Length: 376
Ligand code: OSB
Ligand code: MG
Image (cartoon, rainbow, N blue to C red; front, side, top):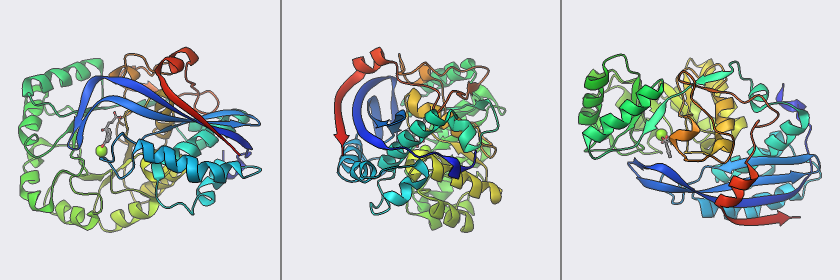
């Protein structure tokens, strides 16, 4: 379905709902530990039905500059009034409509996603079909938080390998890197697809240290250096043989194009929230494809709402590596939608209209901590 065929819709109200969901196990990265997620869901109420979006901003501005209260504020004060003032809005026009608001990509992505869901539900078209998906299941990996104890790390990885996950990603930071990777390689052997994610925890001066990872034949090292140090990633790439993948640095298609041109990355992690929405995510997919740069779908510990859209995105042709699109039970005791399940290392792409999943009303009520509704 070509993008311009979206019907457009009149948004009558925007509901901002906060939910609290405890993670099954704490998730530790180089920027902190999360034990419970506080998530902002966006529901647009239109003349043609509703649409759902999920904001991936964290409680604190530690992955990027965005955080959940800021996202809710910018939606309420700036994005929602722009949308509610329009007679007819479409996801394809949303980015231009809110171009006067700089940044706040996670906030924008959540609203665009809700509008897109409403339009696609009304049109009877799934996210995957609209975005250009080519498979009905996506290869799935799992992101493993930092563990202080190597024995516990090996146990955790063993559990995920036995569940069938197709690759393991280890979160790393200085002091928890080489030994952990070596231990996992020794226990699981050379055939386990393995990669690491530093979430900006290193400096270019660590190049020789990071080159010690080379002997472990990792698929990639994700975002070793700070977000705005794109050129330094290009220098690092000359000093390590492990392919470099960017996450935090790729905030837009322009940033992706510059990083590719500078040879700062050989692989790109695509997260719709980070780049302002699923439409920009698709453009980055296409750009990378044209440059022979494989991509994979990142994750931000989403509920079934965000996961449905991520899995649809991951069904596009240049998603060549397993994504952080793990099954619901990797994160939650009870997801807010029908759970996504792992089947032979893959997760099924929803086929119903729009996201193809909805929050289950009873569960949603139970986990809701606040609701505010904005009208014109
Ligand atoms: O860097 O990919 C990341 C979670 C929160 C913030 C940043 C990241 C992550 C993950 C989790 O790695 C991936 C997932 O959702 O399974
Ligand atoms: Mg990452």
